[in-house]
Length: 309
Image 1: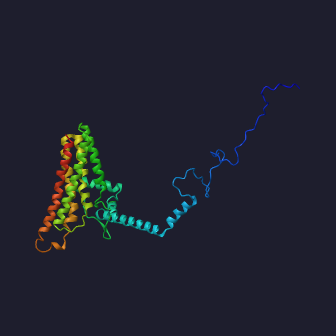
Image 2 (image 1 turned 90 degrees about the vertical axis):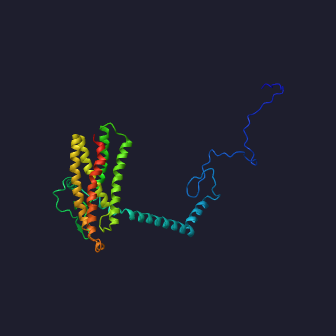
Image 3 (image 1 turned 180 degrees about the horizontal axis):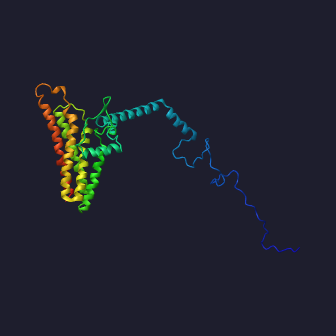
C-alpha cells in the first residue's frame, strides 16, 4: 500500500445519529402513531375536554344522581300536574262556548241528506212534516232527519258564494282581492248580526226554546243557497232572470224559515207566560218569526245586487 502524506486531512467514518438522552425531557410528544384514548364505555374521548369534570365517568354519575334525587322528581311531577290542570282548564273554557261533540252533530250529513235539503230549500211548499224527530230526548242527526238543521250546507254555500262572487266580478272586470274580501266579510257580518239579534230577542221575551246558537247559525246560513241561485240566474239571463230568481228564492226561504221556526218558537209555551200579558207572548213570538223570515229577502238583495249588472 501507498502511504499518503498527512496534510491535515483525517479519514472519517459515517456516524450513526444518536437518539436523545434518556434523561432529557422531550419538547413535543410523538402522537402520530398513538391511538385515541377510550373511556370505560367504549367511546373515544376528545382531545379537549371543555368544561367537563376531571373524572369522565363521574359526570354521568352526577346526571344519574340528579334524576335519582327525590326533590327533582317531585318538581317534575308538580310541573306535569300543573300542565295537565292548565290543559283541562282550557278545554273546559272552550267547551263552555263551543262543544266539539255538538258541533259534530251539525256536520253528520251524507249525500242523500244534502240533495233532499237543497230540494226542500228551493221547493218547500209540498213538504208536510216539519217536526224534528227525537230518539230518547236526543234529536236525530241530519242524515237521519231532513228537518234537522245542519252547518255543512251553510258552510259550503258560503264558500261557493264567495267563489261565484269572484267569478262575477272577474267577468265585469271589477275583480280585486280587496273587493272580494269586502264581499266575504260583509256576508259573514250580516249573519252574525242576525244571530245576535235573534238571541237578544229570545232573551228579552224570556222564550224557553231548545234553539241553540248553532241552530240559529244554520237557519241563517241557508240563505246562501238562494243567493247562489239568484247570482247564477243573473249571470245567465241578465237582470230579468236575476229578479225572477230573487223573488222565487226569497219566497221559498221565507216559507222555510216560518215553518221551521214555528215548531221551535211558537210551540214553546213556557209556564212563566201564564198570567198577566200571557196573550201578548204568542203574538211577540209570532212577530219574531215573521220578522226573521221577512229580513231574508233584504239581505239576499243587499249581498247580490252589486254582482249582477
